[in-house]
Image: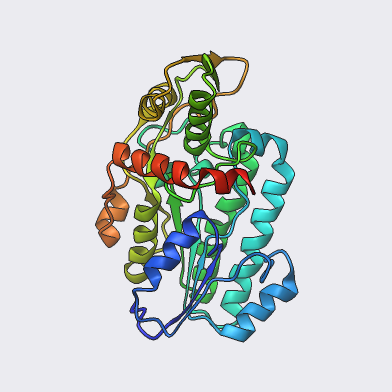
Length: 316
């Protein structure tokens, strides 16, 4: 799909990934780029949704808006994570079809995969079990957008694609300890512990769980490549193909933030899904995406960004 002269609507455009995506889209020769904040367009309000579509008549919708968080936030708000994500996405796809949107790009989540998926996760295994319990409501709500996309393609010929990004990180991430994911949470905690001369940091679980991470600029590039070059009905993993244990991740961030104390593991807390690592061959083969930013370099950039914006974050 040629984006030249297109009107593109990005939901969640003021979010973590959305801000990076919007910057990259500004280099495309679009007719119009629309990226409303949640205050300007609450997708849980049908009137707001109708208005943004009527006022802008988008050719393409990139649906990034989501209610997200780490294990603790998912455990605390499972109903909201299910309802809000479902009700932002399902009506939007329906109204996009009704109003003649040419292409819809739904952003899913690695949390949609079954708890004990064979590693590396392949898209064909997406329905081979129930997701990890701590984030199942969120993962299943997002997975329903795949079901809807395929159903609307089958019945109406509606061009809706579904991407499955792995855990994302980078500058501008959410560093709120109540809702952040593991990388920003560890960066903040280690820096604060270093500055306060604390002797230890307590981390959840036993450190054995593994995760794959993808730098935020790579995510943005993948979304644009898929928007331009992929029109299939099959879901597509978006990842880096790397895997690291949470224990090794914590030790890396401790070293890079110069925290000299001890890391203690609280095994009364959940590990989350045992392993996460994606088979990324479909993205490479279908639209030429491979991750560019090496993991340690991405972590360094994220640490530097947090340290440069730390006071601003703490004052919010």
